[in-house]
Amino acid sequence: MFESLDIDGDEKISVKDVLNALRDGEEKRIKNKAIEIWPSSKDIHWSNYSEYLNRSGEDVNYDFERKKWTFVDRDENDFLSSEQFTQFLSLENSQNPTLKSFWVQETFASLDANNDSSVSQEEFLIPLKKLVHKEEIIDAENWFTAQLDKFNSIDADKDKFLSFDECEKWLMNDDQSSAFIEKIIEESDTNKDTLVSFDEFGENYEPFLILLPNSFFSYDQNDDNLE
Ligand SMILES: [Ca+2]
Ligand SMILES: [Ca+2]
Ligand SMILES: [Ca+2]
Ligand SMILES: [Ca+2]
Image: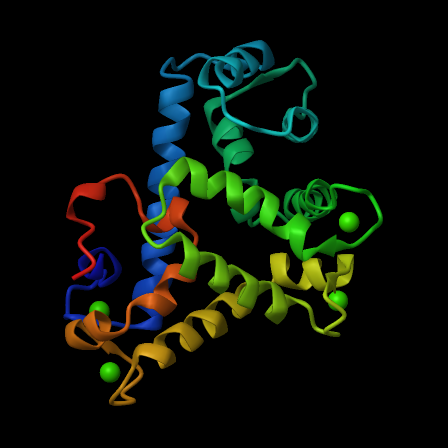
């Protein structure tokens, strides 16, 4: 795990390392997923994708998937080119403001299970619980505590609910992720050089567990040794 975060290999984890590790992990994940779903170089039709969803038994929100598909499918023939399909699978990382703000709105709607225009802690944890189930998180209890800390940090007015504005700030703000990673590093950085050495990491890796597992624990699980 230390090595998968120390992207530049200087045996210290920096903010930049973590940002790069997350980006690389995410790109790799999306690429593999696109190939897994649709190995062909031909355009993919909505029916191919929904067949995949049925087959994989993935617990997804079909309405959300369908809306995203229609949104990305500019020429409305229900086919996506491989470029569009990758875009579809990684809408949350899109640099395109229209796609991104669409994603923010739909994500908020899908988190807000009871449609009361705010996200409770319980609602916030629903998709994360599914994720834990799927990804076999090493230390689920600490991971959940960390996710609740994250909820509290998003909840700017501290009313225990996330409004749309609070979620939008969280989902749109890229700077926040550097600030967020700085905080994680700070917690393990005993000698305060803004870097986390192998020893520091060994003593306190827990703050790093907050990073979402699907980008973090990327495909090669075997060398993810916590010690
Ligand atoms: Ca490094
Ligand atoms: Ca709600
Ligand atoms: Ca709030
Ligand atoms: Ca240090």
